[in-house]
Image (tube, rainbow, N blue to C red; front, side, top):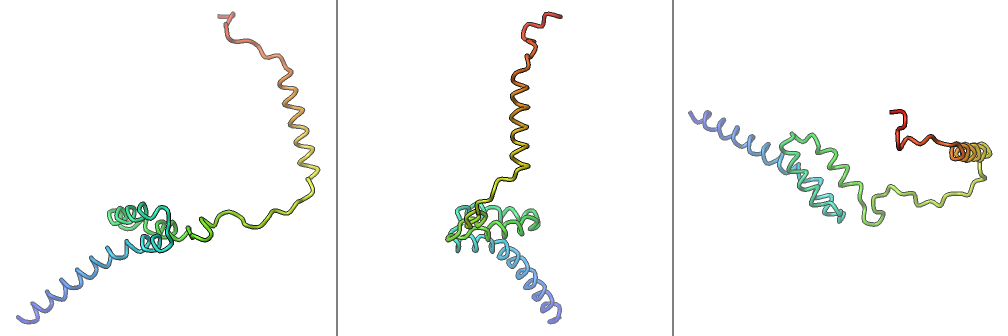
Length: 120
């Protein structure tokens, strides 16, 4: 009889640890965002709670979203290196000239006026 109650106690304990463990795991992206002073920390926290109902499918994206922002660099997606001045490519210059000539030809063509529809 004692072993039945002991097994029941172990099952309840394991269930509670898993239940609260899942709830604690959902909060990790929010804690990362809060530590980094992320401007969207509240949205990440709300999305973390929503991820509980989606079986944590969006949770990896929340992790990525939280780790993208760093206060000293911002989002880290812009290039801080100054672009080197390169000589213009002659092929690109020729294509630009050709496009401008074609645009001038199109502008010079007389377009029919369909505003009154005389054939109807």
